[in-house]
Image 1 (cartoon, rainbow, N blue to C red):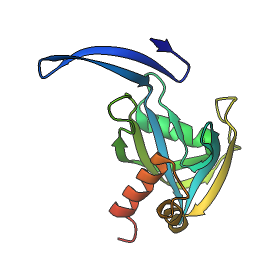
Image 2 (image 1 turned 120 degrees about the vertical axis):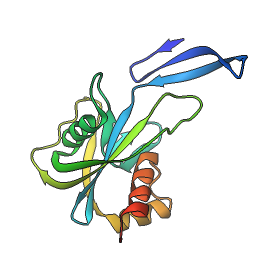
Image 3 (image 1 turned 90 degrees about the horizontal axis):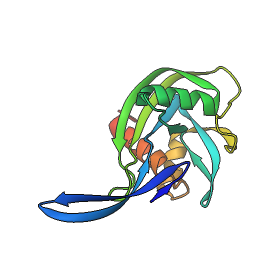
Image 4 (image 1 turned 30 degrees about the vertical axis):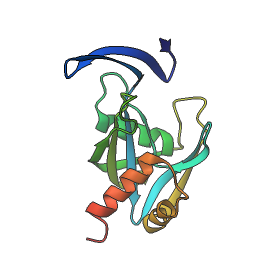
Length: 166
């Protein structure tokens, strides 16, 4: 139906409970993102996402063909921020667009990070600014509605509920 750079749109004919149904589905490459800690601070990026504009978010990106999510998360974190993480653990996996997209997002938590180089995004149309923020402040911005990026919200709130202050 449509084949693009970021996604394809296809019509899928299938049977559900014996009934023929048609679904228009956005086929997307899965993504890996990183909630990275340096002490009590998190490493974030500010990036323009048309049509929403500039968003503050956790770094991440597409998983390349044949790449596992953890490797992709580590690679994207380094490319976008210039930091490297000594430890990286899976936090959660979620489907942000249930019912009309194949996208799966794999979230990781990184610790023991250190600056190794200047950030060098792979895509020439990425304009990234690296930001550091205290985790409590990030939670406050999420809870006040000032941070609206779903992957950042999910990762931070799940991390808070499982680990923060325990």
